[in-house]
Length: 342
Image 1 (cartoon, one colour):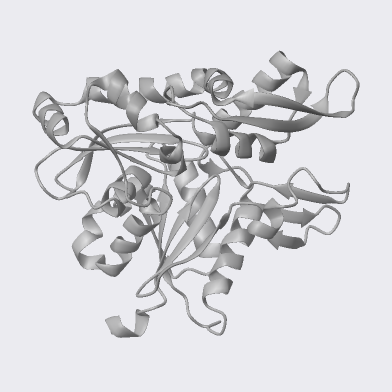
Image 2 (tube, one colour):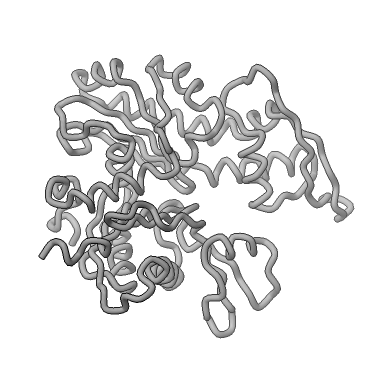
């Protein structure tokens, strides 16, 4: 019986910034931005993923490009369902009859109502069964941490909408904190700073590019510089400004501080035995935010703990959820149990 489902079961990392789909036996097949472009009058979906992201901030009046997830939870139910359906269809082109089992990742601080919405979106998009796994748990499994052992593992998953900090032992989350300060807030901080310091308006895509090229959390040996284009708030004309990575570090200091505070607060709540384990094993960083230059250095500096960046931080949540699909029976107990869901 089990063999007939191979290749159909899937795990979905439904992220604020990117959605990844892992298909059993085949790995991560979809990795696209969580953006949907809709026609405003008819409501039809014009583009999803990369194509829709290119439209952000560049659409005419009758087309709107939206990000259906905000702060890690569903903000626009219909668009999320359409997006899921589109990604499932991409993976299963010919199999209209195949109703997959689906494991979906959610932030650990999510409410029961929000969890219901995620499950409902999964069922509406054509899943046979929907299972929920908490993001930090999936990130820990994906980063290769021994989650089932009686030792403390700490994972910090900095995504687009939420930062998840959790201490995991014996296949369960001992303490966790989910804060809604993450990659998007770093982008917004850059937009605000450019407005204040240079009276220059940036779009969210430009802000994200600036963060990726110049962003850093800790002083760098050489501070790179770049020209940034935007619209002058006074004259209304396009203008270019030269900015260094030290400026950008200054711009993102506040949201960065919130992320570090979340790590400290979680360590503060950790039982002493497990805190000792973390001191030995270190903190594992995953999620897109783990790619911010110097974030590991900064955390090391602030907490005194060893900090490691996961091997492929962008896909670790999807790979962890994928492991739950591959070894369904063995990892069944890390999935959120039925009783808590309803």
